[in-house]
Image: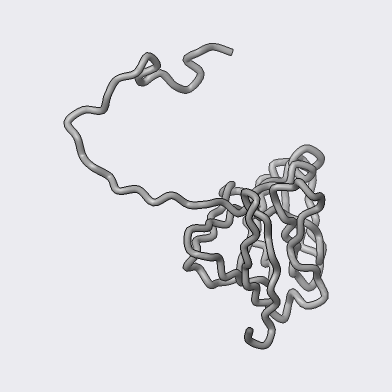
Length: 162
């Protein structure tokens, strides 16, 4: 393991996989992502910023985490909103879920958007999003003249009622 990297293990479908984490200088002193409870699906990501960051209503900001991940082949990282920020402040992840591919080696950043009525201030170390790891299936697409119909067929967008 290289200098500045720390390993941590994560549980997935009863398995434990290892993810290598490079901690960037602006993350130092902050905790690594971790599960809040034994059965939590997501690990909290923290804001690795020097000072307060104000996000005006209707605006968004790219918030660094100070972490680079080396995800195993066949694993995707999903950056998802924290429900508490959404319900209390109207703050969510703009491109939810954001995808971290297994071959991405850049810093993990979170696009926070303020859909609330008040300025939202992000402070260093705030839990801003959660990271969920998922298996990835790869598909081979095959063109056909027509796909098989179903009872539902093309019904969508609320076609079954409220």
